Length: 97
Image 1 (cartoon, one colour):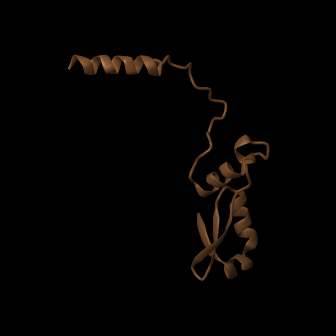
Image 2 (spheres, rainbow, N blue to C red):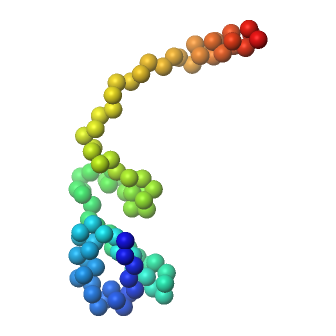
């Protein structure tokens, strides 16, 4: 990630655009404060994650990271005891004390 002032950005705009096209984020500063970002283009406009504005914003901020392998499918679900059964066992265990 690079930081560049507005004046330097104007002088070498194509250099920073090429850096963003190569996957780098360029932070644009004005008097030391970040005022804008030049980011790489999204992988595909049809991507479900990027089509949701809230998720796209969270990705941009770095709060979440998209899956590297979107074809991954989790394994089979594991059987979990029903809530009533768990509570019944818990009460029985407490009554034994």
